[in-house]
Length: 227
Image (cartoon, rainbow, N blue to C red; front, side):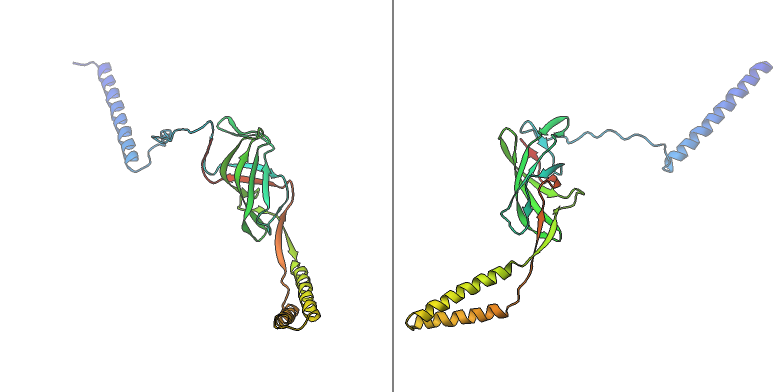
């Protein structure tokens, strides 16, 4: 038979086992109700079969960096060259991809909207003269599409109207100075009709957007670049 001390120890051990069982059941209920303690997720493993690197450097789609316009840009001239220069080197994943002084050359290819000009940059020219092709879009410094500029109003149509009237007057003078012929009569009639139309037509104002030299901007890569 057990003595009193042995029986007391047995009761203590039994009580501890009962308490442990209650705690285990409570945890099981908690897990089944979705209140399990937070567990750190497994680290991202990346793409299983990534594309092989084609060159020394690669930049992902959407990569954005800052630059400064080297010259002024005008929206009304779609052939206006746009050149942006990097005043600081651009690095990615611990490597300098674009050194300081690299230039991006493009054009104003899309008509402006409101107070912005859309600029597409197609060529990257490195300080040593080497160059690559790319697809970049100019952004405002807040990251929105298009580069903000100054809206200006022009009345260039007035000058065109004056020039046209001068030409018509010359045609009329030639027709009047020569011997009347069918051709001179037709020319004179047409010139008079055109002159009358120019007098009665309304002159429309034209708005354009100008961006000053040294304007800062952001440039976003629209398609993955490898070189």
